[in-house]
Length: 234
Ligand code: HEM
Image (cartoon, rainbow, N blue to C red; front, top):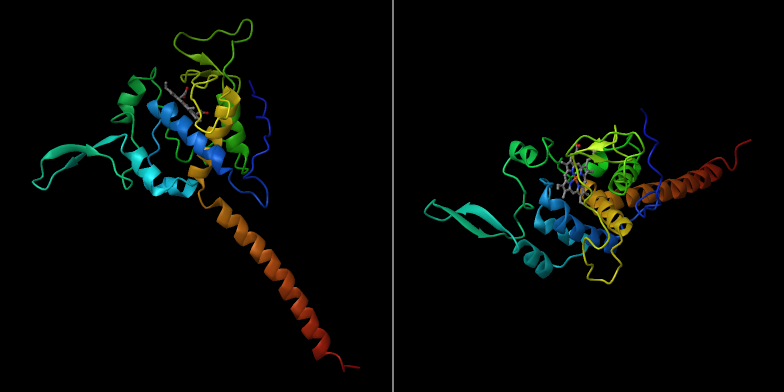
């Protein structure tokens, strides 16, 4: 049966002049780090990328230093060392099989490009869907049977998902004093996921604005030149 299209949300990054809400996306990174990253990888992300969200180099170093990574020493022996800004985000599972085994047979999908991967392809479709999904864990309606170990979700296709409801009120404590309602957490993590999916979104939009301004000025110039060249034509 068909799901209703996810509700349209008013994202700061939407529209012709869209920009990222960096404070929200930084909180969203905290949600990813403390909640989602227990199951979901972000294979395309490196700690140093976080400078693009407004974290400074010391903050990025400190974030990376919370993790250990496998490496080899100069003698080629395997060692474990503290992660550095140049390392990729921590992957919670060694491989997809292990990830599926730990999650009722379904591999939690990589979230790097998730905001682009879901929806019909419109810019805000993916974000609207993810927000609806994250806030869509409810009790199943009368008569709807949810198999053991699975969960009802209003937005998920078929309404039965292996993902448990992970976003609850106060699942995180925000350092900037923002109240961590489950809606706020969902909102923030979607802002973060849109930034990871298209970090150059602002550049793309700004170029569009400059091109239009240039074309307006250029059209005016052409008109003036035309008037001048043809001024004495009979
Ligand atoms: C699926 C986001 C936390 C396990 C998904 C999907 C998204 C998502 C967007 C894809 C839904 C779809 O295919 O339409 C998130 C976010 C999280 C989070 C933003 C943190 C706020 C977790 C955690 C777990 C988990 C902590 C494990 C305990 C799964 C699994 C699936 C999934 C198993 C596959 C569901 C299925 O195919 O039935 N998640 N997730 N997620 N997630 Fe999460």
